Amino acid sequence: MPRILICDDHTLFSDGIKAILRFEASIEVVGEARDGRQAVEKVKELRPDVVLMDVAMPDLSGFEATRRVLDAAPDVKVLMLTMHDEEELVARCLEAGAAGYIIKDAPASQLVYAIQTVLKGERYLSPVVLKKVMAGYVKNSQRPQTSYDRLSGREREILKLLAEGLTIKDIAIRLNLSVKTVDVHKYNLMRKIDVHDKAELIKYAIQKRLIDIPIADVS
Image (cartoon, rainbow, N blue to C red; front, side, top):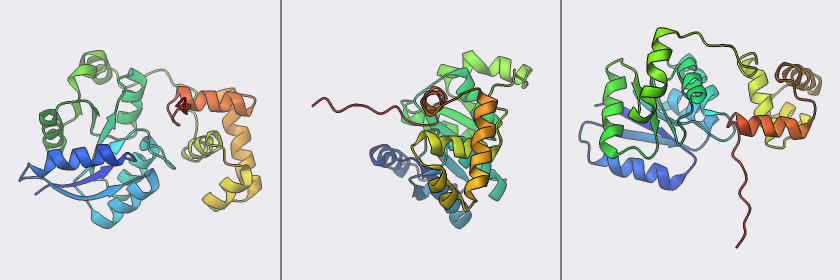
């Protein structure tokens, strides 16, 4: 029986996925994770067959979490979940090693089919994005390198934490690095993506969907 790990920081969405899969006798949900780091740890602990991974995960992005999941457990199939269908997002998911990409508002039957597809070792893309990207991606897996592509894994991690408002010292403590090392990474990543201050960095992170756009409370 395939074992499924659900990785999403929205409890209502996770509960909905569990409710859908509860009616599938051939699928077992073995756990949940609320952020990217926890997703990696849960994979190591539970060894699921398929990970349903939200693209916009807190603490560690879905892209980086996917890379680390596959480093720890290469046989795991990662199926990315998102509300967006941009070609660059799809390409980044597949480049991170994901086996599939499904839109969150897809019908329940499509989610089950997607899980079954990746379990067979095949790739899956939601029909809504398939026409946009699949033909071009399969024929030509190479695409022009973006500024984000040029960042190392550590630089991407520090970029996200800086955009979330952490100080250099905070990041050094969290990542168990020296302040000087973090500062060097900050300098290098800002040079690579051609931003020059904190405001530009946050704008860049939002454009790349590394962080969520804050919604003002107007009630």
